[in-house]
Image (cartoon, each protein chain N blue to C red):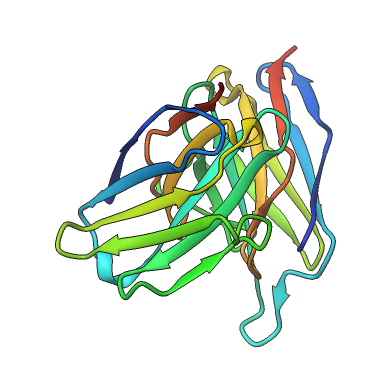
Length: 113
Length: 113
């Protein structure tokens, strides 16, 4: 199984400031034949299912604000919230879909400082 | 936009069989794979497996011996059965499209004697 490791476990950021979450996979999730990283980011608010934010490591899902961006390749990835808003308080997960079993990171809780 | 609605028993005794069903509304049921994912405070998000319209399945090896997924294309529904449940199977269970774009509302399943 590909193990996904996120850091930090929690993060407190002031409104309007940048939040950065890291995700490392135990194996490469870049498929060489199409040069795509099989890595997604989700946001989960309390009592709700996860919501897809980013796929292919850096493609923003339709309707997701452009303050959310994803970067990285191979085994190291980052989710950045450029200017934290109150509604961004949530837990964020990375997920690899390069191979089954699909696996998720342990989550990063983002709070307002 | 694809919408998923799930239902099933929320309280089970040890050794019983968990049974959940998910209905898919909108989109192409035949054009995708459909997943079950569960979430616990301790283990986080865990992919249980997936099924497509023809009944082709892929299960997480950690649960494979106890999992059965089935599909009813006439109703655009798919189902999960997990046998011989224990307290460790207590979790919120989600159905979700393989794309990650659509999720059911979640069902809390508690296993307790």
